[in-house]
Length: 137
Image 1 (cartoon, one colour):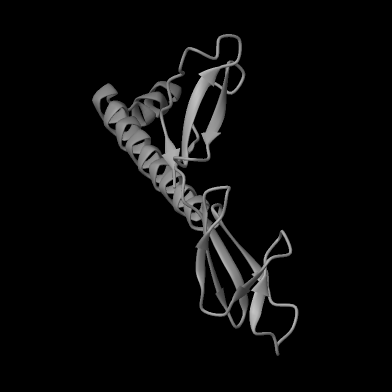
Image 2 (tube, rainbow, N blue to C red):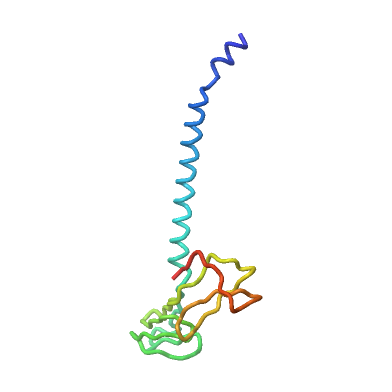
């Protein structure tokens, strides 16, 4: 009787391999989808910020440095941001591609404010560049 139960539950190794392969493929597809979604969420929110107008009767917008800009005006900051003033306030977005996937223990990102570009250099030897696998704008 026990031998009969074992034979009934015995599954062909090819069936097991096929089931395992389908399961792993499904897991990889789900993981890939979550990574893409998380990347888009990060890209959409991480590089811009908003400063609401303090007064609804204002003729302009006051930035973080206390400078007032005219309504409907656009400007670039010294920190490589593109900004716009409207009735609601100021929206500023980063214009420099930011290095994301590099060895942060060994390397550091340095912003060139004249060209609005980053260079990733070794901390111990700043003359050597580091490999960067991903950039975010």
